Image (cartoon, rainbow, N blue to C red):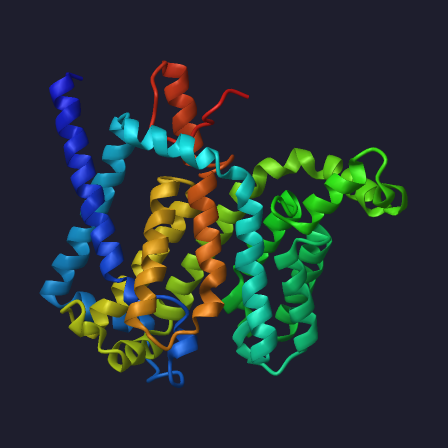
Length: 370
C-alpha cells in the first residue's frame, strides 16, 4: 500500500469516524434514564411496528441507512489502516500518569450518589423510594473517606444485589455493579484514609502500628487479589457497555411510547429537526452501538469520550434529570477513558498484531514495558 493511498484512507477514515461521532452526539440529549424523567409509561406501542413505521419514511430510511454505512466504513477503515498519531501517543502517556487516581475517581462517583440517595430517601436508584437511609449514608461516606474501602465496597455491592432481588427497578442503577467491583479490585488508592493509616501503621516505631491489626489483614487480602487487579479496566468497560445496551434496548427501543413522551416534553425535535420517531429510534440504536463497542473493547477511549460528552449534553437537554443519579456513569466513563480497554479487548488484539508486525498502533497498549 503506497503512502498516498494510506494517507487517503486515513483521511477518509477520520472523516467517517467524525461524522459518526456527530451523529451519536446529536442524539445524546434524548438519552439517559428515561424512566427518571418520563411521566407514566406513555402510550403502549409495539416496538417492531414502531421501528418499521419510522423506517418506512424515506427521509428516515436514508438517515439511518447512511449513518449505518458511515459507521461501518469508519470502523473498517480504522481496523485496516490503524495509523499512528503522535498526539494520541502523548495523550496515552499522560493518562497513564493518572492511573493511581482512578480508585479515588471511582470512590467519588460511587460514594457521592449513595450519600445523595440516603439524604433523598431512595435506595440506589430514584425509582425505588423510602428505603434504609442510614445504610447508604454510612457506606457512601466511608467510600468518600476511603476507609476500609474494599470491605465497604463489597458490602455496598451485596446491598445493591439484595435490593435488586426485591426491586427489579434497580436495574436502572446497574452501573453500581462494575463500579463497586472495580473498587474491590483496586482498593482505596490515594488520597484515602486507608492509604494514610497504612503508611502510619507500616512505619517503624509508630504507636498506631503496634495496635492496628487491620493493616496486616488488608495487606494479606491485597496480596491475594493483586493478580486480578489488571482486570479492573475490563470490568468497568464491559459493565458500562452493558448499561448502554440495556438503556438503549429496554428503555427506548422496547418502550418507544415512554421515550416519545420525553421527546415531546422537552421539545427535543427543536434541537435536531427530525421527527420524534427518528429521535427515539436513533437514541436507542446509538446507545446500543456505544455499548457494543465498549463490550468489544474497540475504539475504547474514543467511545468513552463520546459517552462523557453525551452525559454532559443530557444535562442541558433535560434540565430536571436527577443529575446525582448519573454521577456513577460520569465516573465509569472517566475511568475507562483514563485506563483504556484493559485485557480481553479488540483494541489489545490489534495492538498485539501491530507489535508482532513491528509497527506502532492506535490500538490500546502499555505505555511502559512490563
